[in-house]
Length: 595
Image (cartoon, rainbow, N blue to C red; front, side):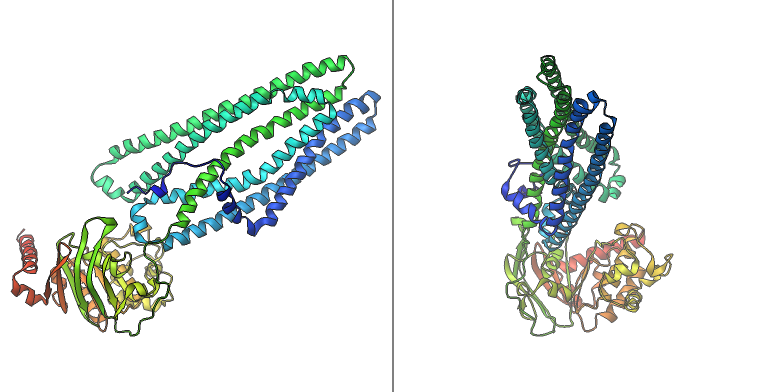
């Protein structure tokens, strides 16, 4: 779904004082290093002005006089200046890049913290590839601004001003001849600025599209291969990649025109200097050393002009990237903690849905006026056809979303008045689609909590997960692949059982948790669950009605409404929706047995 707040197209002004002020705040903790970098750059730029003057003195004074000692002094001084420039440039580059990396670290940490706080609805709207572009490409652009942009601009401007002053002092007439090509230079720089800005705009937009499509295909690679979409998806990716290539080539074209253009203008300026200066030398109004110094200064003069144009592109890219990043940082979670959160008065773990109605993103109602109560220590099962709203109940109870109408109570307290971390600490949720981290088996069970290794092993045995864990190369220390690629669906769900039970939650929620487990394993799990559910409040969502026959109560959802409620036997006697569901599954099971 498209979110206008996260449009990848670069818009707005090339320079925004408000955004720059906010960006510079990230440099405040390192201002002493930044100031040091600027001072070093000024020193290096100052030393760069001395070289042509030394050359002038050598040509005009020491060479005509045949003074070898004077020439040697000039040479030694020149070497010292070069050494100073090397040391100064090294320290400046190291300092500014160190600061840039620290700022990138701070921004990435802030972005990760923000993403962890955002509601699930945000991730429903925004593709992961686009978010990754923000965190990687846009943060890198800001790094370039701090390392190659802001600090380097001071050095370029100082060098330009210094060269202009020295040239005017040496010979103002020849200086004006040198500056006569500036209008052409300014025109080509302005043209370059406009063209490259448009090219960067398209490049950033198409890069985000490539990243989003690439991420989607990597995650869905099993589906791609199962449905033989490799060539179709390759063609689509080829189109996106071609668009990105064209944008990059367009950018390269403008750079290829601009830099040789500046060099050509510089060569024309030097030719004018030679022509005019040569005439002055013939009329003895200019020394040869001054002419050589002018040529050297002219070569140095056009380099910072060219660099400033490149810094402008870095700056305008940084403005666009910072605007997108700040929009992400300013994003407010839709589900917020109460300003005055309340503590639960009791630990009974009673759950109650009161006239709950809910719709995703303003669409059709998924739940309509749903009401039921789960007593302490009671196991309530939720069944119904696909799309009835079963999993939505769990999302609402976990406060991934807030209800539009009605309320959900925990021990008589509206869950919107309870801090989300406190609420979720009481819940142990096992989902149908289990997410496995690229960590060891034990780490996937503990998830960074203070659970002991003994408790992790105990929970694994309780749900029979130890049967496959003991067969792994390093048992509980075995590092799993990303998303548990080397485990079967059933093994991933068993691991999720162990994860939930190891945390010893007072409320246990099973969302289609046995759908991918074979019958033999399911029987082992049911025995383990029956023992561990003692004293816990539990909500079980299941397709397999055979797994919930011992539930204290079964609620039948249909089209987002509670249609039936009762025990397994009571519902069968009603011969309603539950009876039809049970009959369908029984017939399917019989058919399977006959086959």
